[in-house]
Amino acid sequence: MTITWTNDMTPSTRFWDKISDKYAASPIKDQGAYEKTLARTVEHLGPTDDVLELGCGTGSTALLLAGNVSSYLATDFAPGMIRIADDKLAAATEENKVPAGLRFAVADAFSEAVDNGKGYDAILGFNFLHLVENPEDLLARVHGLLKPGGLFISKTVCLGDKAWLFVPMIKVMQLFGKAPFVRSYTFAAVEDMIGSAGFDIIETGTYPEPRSRFVVARKI
Image 1: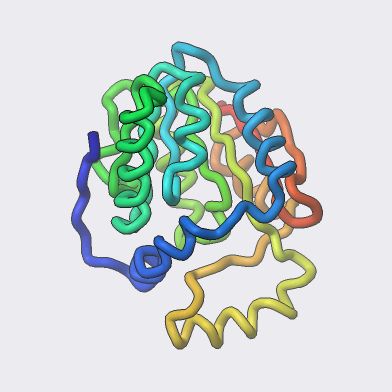
Image 2: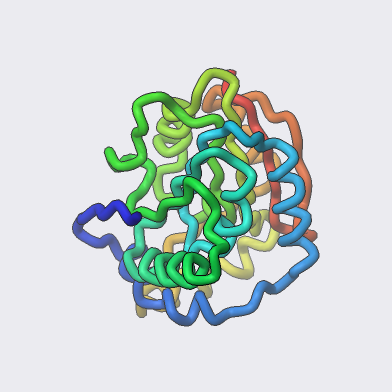
């Protein structure tokens, strides 16, 4: 089942929608780091959990994780990404490999479609926070959507001390619609921002080295 959400596309939405097919065809750059991220995430999930994933892309991670929980709503603001995710879900249905409770939706964290009325045990955002234009508002919304003691599990690309090298190039590419909005963070900046939003960080890791920071944070 797909929940649809219509909005006026921002430049970032248009970018991700346009490249959805290319994104889906791209191989995972570091399979070991990806599997480590999945393994550490599963350690924090339980069979009765209600889970929301933000920025799910084409749904590959959702299809792998949803079988570990009770319900799993995977969202992305780019319709093209969810179109491909739905195709994957349909293929899994034909093979009788559909995780129970998995749904995809064209939505973002601020959409009414993600408000389930009871809160989530975990909210996931992989390779996500550095692409968010309003991270403080986003984290406040995540905090509000979580049940007491719920978890925000994220992985963030941190350009940090290499920002001087990447940022000028990214800005030029953005002028021509060849790059999305991107923020440059250090590990400490990401962790401080999450902590300031009302979370207690209980686990960190770097998968892959040296720039992808994995953080598990509990709502205080």
